[in-house]
Amino acid sequence: MTVPEPGDAVPHEASSSQEQIAPQHTPTWPSEGRWWEGGEASSVGESFDPKRLDTPMDRMERATGGRRSRTITTLKRGRYVRARPSPRDPSDLALDATLRAAAPYQRARHAKSPGGPALHLRAHDYQKKVRVRRSANLILFVVDASWSMAVEARMEATKGAVFSLLTDAYQRRDRVGMIVFRGDRALLVLPPTNSVELAQKSLSDLPVGGKTPLAAGLWLAYQTVKHELLRQPDLSPLLVILTDGAGNVSIGASPPQEEAYVLADQLREMKVRSVVINMESAKFDQGLAQSLADHLDGACYRLDALHAAALLQAVHSELEG
Image 1 (cartoon, one colour):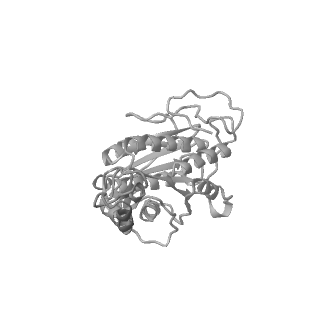
Image 2 (cartoon, one colour):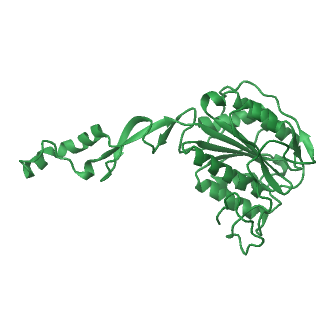
Image 3 (cartoon, helix red, strand yellow):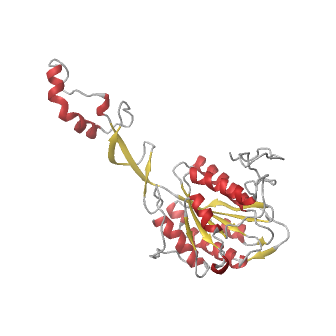
């Protein structure tokens, strides 16, 4: 299955789960104004100065760093930290490492070509520079705003975490965004930004209620990450998905849960870091949040108390991992 680009035509019918999935109401990048008419509004959770919190929470392995670590970059920018073999490819050559690789063979090469140059290099001697640079994070919250357990607390906690992350995002070049899904659609209510002012304007009044279009939320997350990576290829995205893992609205012809897993697989293939915050009560948990995290190849947390500090703690755990 492939994911359509923004603006693609929406298929009316799909013969199988391998067909394209596109929402019946195609999400768009937002402009000013309200996002939904009707519904009940949620308030903004308490924000606070962010700080590093050392906790025993599980941490998933990550391939690249973020604002608190260094990221290997393929661009010819950044600090040269080591070299790796690069046979027959002299681009961004690490001269020192190349000379060291060729040194053991100089006597034999001179014996074969006594009248040759003082230094005999071969294509298989080439060593390429490995560079690292600081990269910014994209922290994208994907929040279930349907009529499920403690939806108002969930929205307040998420908005509180957003504002807390934004207090130091400008300094660290991080960007924070928020997607909500409810009813029959997902909306990018806060486009990725480092502006507290924009967040206050965008998140002040968000209705809640309706069904749970989980697949639509994941589809819009995919498109948003792809859009941001086109603008800033070295960006390190992290999805923070607050859900019980149960979707009950399809955006195509496939069953809702199957659609969600297909989209989660595509996010995993993009190597997007993800963490699922399990919103289901432990007493009634069917394991759907964990299944979603497995498809994303991400961690699944259950927070004993859902508030901004606990959610921010989970985010920091992933960024520091």
